[in-house]
Image (cartoon, rainbow, N blue to C red; front, side, top):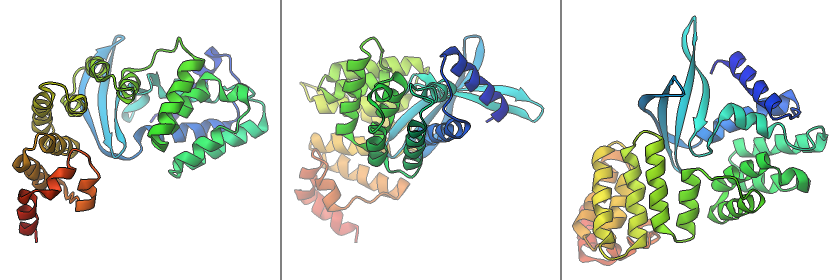
Length: 315
């Protein structure tokens, strides 16, 4: 990124929010942690398309990783050396990274040295992948600081990497403290899914799809949600979305894993086994019997004659 210009943007955001930056070290540490967390666990990052927003060209980039996915708008700046990244907008978080850094660095009690030290510790734990410890450390901040909007947003982000229960609690706490804060489509989708409102979760995927200008990868999650809803005809619909996702994303493993689950739920054992073949052939992914049994829709596959025959052929 173009560091000097980026820092000017961050400083500008901080002034707009009338905050006092904790310290240069905290600011840089927070910035590094934000960038790392936004791109953490990425196994695939690609340009989807370029569009115009607010009169400026923006590249729309998608990240897929072991813990999920994300979409980003990329703002660039022309330099003598060519275009450089100036700022990133996260559709997951609903903010520019420069603004998020400025807000996080402008928390209440910003002149409190222990609070600054705590945030530095949280950043280090996050960068080390110790998400549960980072969340617990963040929660040692004074109540006024912990309940500020920037820290609440930080809690949600960290909790999302710490576990499902922690993420659900963080979402509920932020919603209680800031009821007027509108969640992003991805956050709204996750919240709806966790409370069992699958129709709303699907609606939020459609909103996200429109916001990023279209991404066929999202059919993967339509398939998963519809299969989980499992109403009349839902497994057939889920199968259609799963097939579409696999065709549109042949170089990504996640659509194949959803195809496996949906096919097994429909008792289409040959289709499920073909998905296992594809995962091994194209991505080197081999699921053990214990791993297959740990996936509820797939578990019955392991006890079928078809699986026994297929397993024998793998030796």
